[in-house]
Image (cartoon, rainbow, N blue to C red; front, side):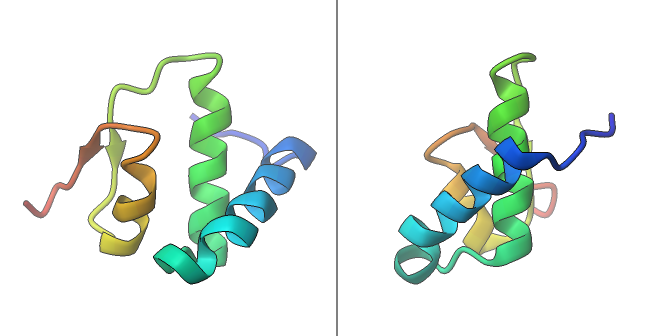
Length: 71
């Protein structure tokens, strides 16, 4: 599925960066990916967040069950 990066996604991404960038190493594009998933999860349940990126996984595990295809 394709999800538009709208103002809600951008706003959440900025908030995630402000609160987690230094503490957990969250990067800009990762914050957009994660914020999109968080917002979509409010409408359609996301069973697994798929990533092999360790930094992103470390942050996303607070919101989702993680599936790492490289594990």
